[in-house]
Amino acid sequence: MNSNNFVGKTLAGLTEAIKQAIFAERYARLPGLLQGLDPRGKIITFLSLLIVTAITRHLRVMAVIYLLTVALALTSRIPLLFFLKRVWLFIPLFTGVIALPAIFNIVTPGRPLITLLTFAAPLNWGPFHIPATIAVTQQGLHGAAIFILRVATSVSLSVLLVLTTEWARLLQALSALHFPKIAILIFGMTYRYIFLFIKVAEEMFLARRSRTVGRTNTREQQNWLSSRLGFLLNRSYKLSNDVYLAMLSRGWTGHARFLDDFRFQWRDTAWAAFTIIFIGTIIFFGEMK
Image (tube, rainbow, N blue to C red):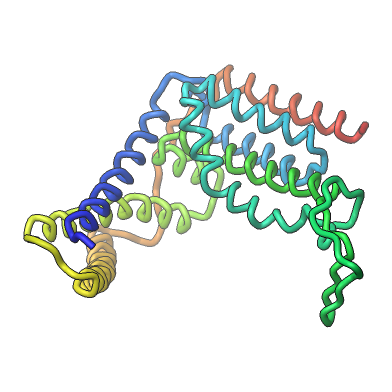
């Protein structure tokens, strides 16, 4: 394995992580629909939509909520492909792997749609029972679709909230809504120091790349990587102590303070009214089915 390729790919990955985070932060400053709303109202309304998504049992209702998230992304000037990649690339696909067994009649009995295997007789292995015919059932597909779409819609709402709200204002809104202040402080410091340690790791890989001539074997790369991970862990621990002592020396009392400059405007009232009407409508038609 070529060390320069290994280090170069890692360095490129770290740099790309920083660029993606900074690039995503730019969307919160665009003059879009959600960017102009009060963060407090956004948190409350998005939480309401998340609750409705979690409790609904109707696939069409959930699809309508998901289409709403897509429309909100477009009206907030978030590129559709960028938004879909952030939602569908990781979590829902992983959820799909989890939900995959539920589509078979082994897990979810029901009306068979596609027959996959047929045995001469049912198989019994201790507490496990395998029917003579293994098939994909209609009930299983319906349940798996609801599960995947529920996760996708929930992730879409969360991504929209983060992409359209600056991190500092999001923390201020959580503070205004009486979210635990210690949790807000932890979120803020974690977000900030993630970038710091990514930068430190990037500098370490860049230093190794600049000092490497020729090829190195896999064992040497593993030893170097493990030593750098230990160094980074030790540095993070020391930095946390230094920051805490610096905060104490500057009068830290254990309570975070945030400046609240939010203003509830007509557009926030319109958005809240739309959310109430939308939720009421989908609940009404969902119960009518």
